[in-house]
Image (cartoon, rainbow, N blue to C red; front, side, top):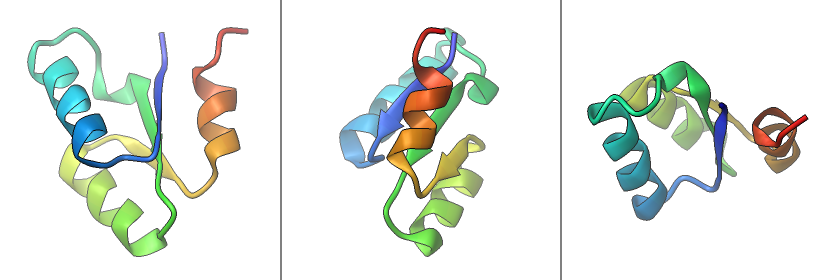
Amino acid sequence: MKIGFIGFGNMAQAIATGLIESQLTDPADLIFSNRTESKRTVLETQFNIKGTLHNQEVWDQASPS
């Protein structure tokens, strides 16, 4: 199951950290959107998860088929 975050502020980061640290999900199953390229790059590196600038991409990848 893919989990998506539209926006990746403090709350989303805390949830993602909890999911990863408790091994409830693999980082490869998480995706987030962020409005700035530089911040997206930093967050991708920090959390080792995929980021995008486009909310629609998060929706497309995380919503059930």
